[in-house]
Structures are given as structure tokens and as C-alpha cells.
Amino acid sequence: MQHVVVGVDTGEAAPAALGSAADLAARLDAELDAVHVQPLSPAQIRTMISTVPGRHACERFLRAEEDAQTRAARTLADRTLTATPVHWRFHVRAGDPVTELLAVADSVDAYAIVIGTRHGGVGVALERLLTGSVSHRTIHRTRRPVLVVPTEVDDRPGRDA
Image 1 (cartoon, one colour):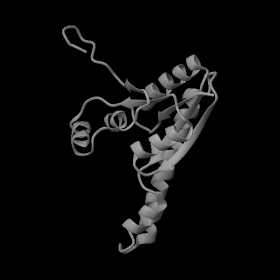
Image 2 (cartoon, helix red, strand yellow; image 1 turned 90 degrees about the horizontal axis):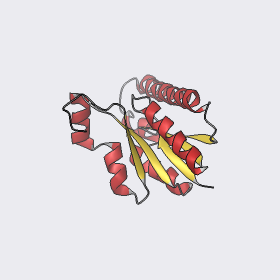
Image 3 (cartoon, helix red, strand yellow; image 1 turned 135 degrees about the horizontal axis):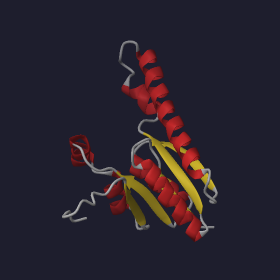
């Protein structure tokens, strides 16, 4: 059985990426593996705040925030994929999004990886400058096909795509 892996977060790109991944999986008669990556593991949270006064409250806050993000990503996947004919699973990982996405792709020997990409804003540009985009880093770290799905395309007359 073939697999398609899709990265899922709570950002604006997630619905388009999920929809495209489900379409690809249906066309390939493949299973879909939706992967949500929390930025920090519980061990990393404990290490990061080990010397902070009131660290237990801080740890609870960070863990609650990660849990809320995971629930939101799962709800989005449920809403988007329920009507699709594909069999899908939801994976929750912690760490670097690219590393974890590729680890799941390797574990299921994925045919392809689908990732959404965001457009616009100074914040997005600054983030990409400092850390590189997840889509760009994924493309350069895997030999698997990667489908990058834009959230919006500027199709105004006179604009080159």
C-alpha cells in the first residue's frame, strides 16, 4: 500500500494542503498520513524552564498551549478529511517539523510529501530568512516527491505567477 504524508498545523495553508493530499492519495489509492509537529517535546520544555521561578506553572502553560494546537490541527484534519474516501491516520510528533515529517515519511515509505506554504507579510519573510521555510528545507532534505500547495495565488492581471 502506498502512502502520502501531509504536514498539518493550524495555519492558513493547512486546509489547502490537506485537500490536495487527500486528492493525491485518492488518485493513487494510497493511505494518507497527516503529521502534526509540536515545536517542543516535554523534555525540552522541562530543560528550557528548569531554572525559571514558577517553572511548574510555566510548564503547564506551554504544555496546554501545545495541546490546544494539536487539538486544533486534529479538528481541522477531521473536518477536512471526513468526506474523503481515503483511509487516513493522524500522527503527533515533537521537534523540528522537517525532521519529524521526514521521519514519518521514511517510516511508511511514503510515495510523496504534501506541504502547504504561506504567502505574504513581513513576519513570514523574516521567519523564512531566519530559519528557512519548512517547504524549502523539506525539498532539500528528501529524495521523495514534494508537492508544495500555496494558500493563495495572486492572479491579478499583469502579475506573473
